[in-house]
Amino acid sequence: MGKQISKRQRLETAFALEDPDRTPILGGWLACPEYIMELTGATSDEYWSDPTEVSIQAYDYLGMDGLISIFVPRNRNDFRCVDSMSYSKADTGMSLEDAIAEIDAMPTPEKIEADFDFDAEYEVFRRSLIDMGARCGDMLWMPAQWGSGARVTWYGKFGYETYFLIVGLYPDRAQKLMEIGGAQGRCQCRLIARAVQEGLYPEAVLLGEDICTQRGPMISPDFLERYYAPQLRYGLEPLLEVGCRPVWHCDGDVRPMLDFLIDIGVQGLQGFQPECGMVLEELVKRRTRDGEPLLIFGPMAVTTELPVCTPEEIVAKVQNAIEICKGSASLVLFTANTINPDIPLENIKAMYQAVM
Image (cartoon, rainbow, N blue to C red; front, side):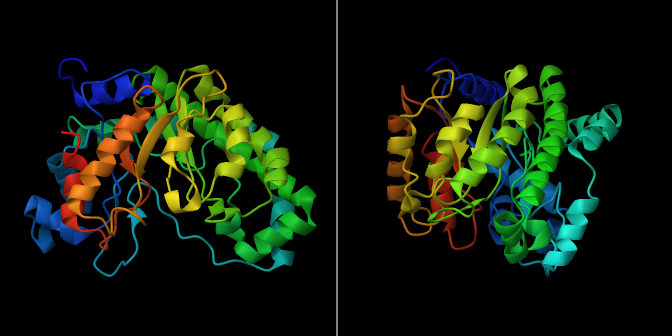
């Protein structure tokens, strides 16, 4: 451990696989307005007038070094949590016939990349990083980049049943979707890579997709390795070229995908569910394709640990995770997923105070 450093330096040191003065903390997924109001002293009217601002105050109070989103309900009648920076309501599904027709009408991957107005898109991205970064003060704003690299979770557009029918019955259309996702994901990664080069984004990015259940991938690992992995490899290239580490998020049991994810360049993991076999002691044994330790955003489980343990047990689990990663992986303290109201506020405080 060295002398005390700034919050950004603390995170960047961990991203470089070096030892900061203490374990860094990432936040952004405290999805409980009542807790945020209690932490800040804000009234209900003050919170609902600007949930983002009051949430930032709560994260600062808790000692966050950086934020990957502001993930809170956006209005009084909204019972789900949404990312305030990018939220679109997924379609509930469509018929197989309509889905096939829509896929056939989609532009080719080549056209998607050719038509991508990089300069205009980058200006929007750059401005958003600067503006939100200013609001976060000394906390590092490093928004998660869902869909970057490639896309396999087209069920959000077509619905689960229709999408899986496409995968099973129309592999040519499924392949086109993977290729489109790769083209779109590469375009986004080009934006991130430029921001990294200009010092507006750190050398690690949280991305990924929820493609696994608690029993493993929702789609055959063979299909994923054959059709999805090449597109993800292509999409991530701009990040790897500038030394930005992709940290992969996926809930559930990701183990059947880990070999090809690491082979194509994923250098970190996030989204730990130990009840699914995603056990930290085993995962830290893995190495990147270049033989380096993994970057771990985690590993606090929001299912089997934070809701049910005592504050003392939470502290012990954090300290145990630090010991497990010491010399084996670079740890940034984070939760596996959203912090919901079923997690006692005392446990939330204990988790963060354990590294202070």
